[in-house]
Length: 169
Image (tube, rainbow, N blue to C red; front, side, top):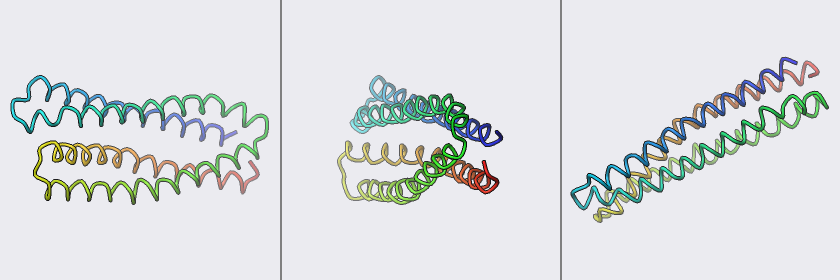
């Protein structure tokens, strides 16, 4: 029964983590509005659409994580009570898949995107491309901040699941 509490706490922590994506998304949208209303230079005006797109993407990620884990947290009790061993096995598989995705996407692809965006700032002199690159770097940094924390949380959750499996559920 302890593993059910741990799983529910993990899902609630993911829901809390999603709120940071929503916060960052809202901040990007507010920045877009600010650039639109207050931007006087060509460089400032070129930030309107990139920050708007980044804000919408972060909001989409945040809402996706929020609703997925909200539903998951409520379904844990039913799944655990019907078959605790199958519940633990499915959660181990899901957490290991998540860790693999974090290793590949968050810790390899996102840094490469940041490097490419930084190179675009250096080599392309158009304000729109610089705005896109700077906004991309800012958005990817937000994702790295939230997901590096989420990665550590899923690793700890996986360790607890493995211990629960060894102890027989």
